Image 1 (tube, rainbow, N blue to C red):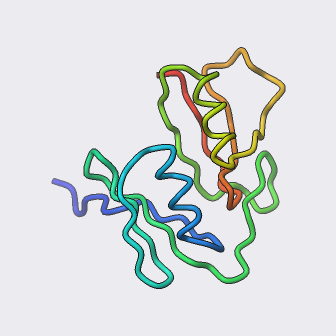
Image 2 (image 1 turned 90 degrees about the vertical axis):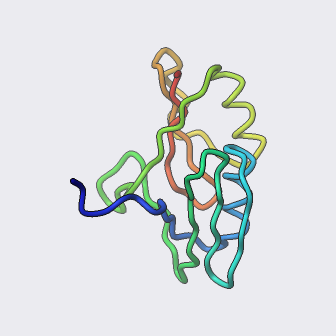
Amino acid sequence: MPIATLGAVVLDCPDPVALAGFYAGLLGGTIVAEEDWVDLRLPDGRTLAFQAAAGHVPPLWPGTEGAQQLHLDLDVADLDAAERAVLDLGARTLDAADRTRTFRVYADPAGHPFCLCAG
């Protein structure tokens, strides 16, 4: 029997409302904001949360200094279409060189790495 269940994945960032908007555009859901904390309540019942962090320094990928800290793997049906959509939302590509893999790595607007994975 587990000791706990996962309540939410929380990302530190400079602007929780803006980053929640990015992920709402990507994953759907409803944004619920409270001061320096924002919940994105996803259609499947899970919560992705965003916390204001003064002096937030984005993780580096790849690299050892300021390592990524956390990343999300997001399954998609069409990598090319999903890439266009996340770039339109404000993501930036972190691994533009290799398009043969079944995943691609991006940074959200606050610099957190995430992967789009062929699913």
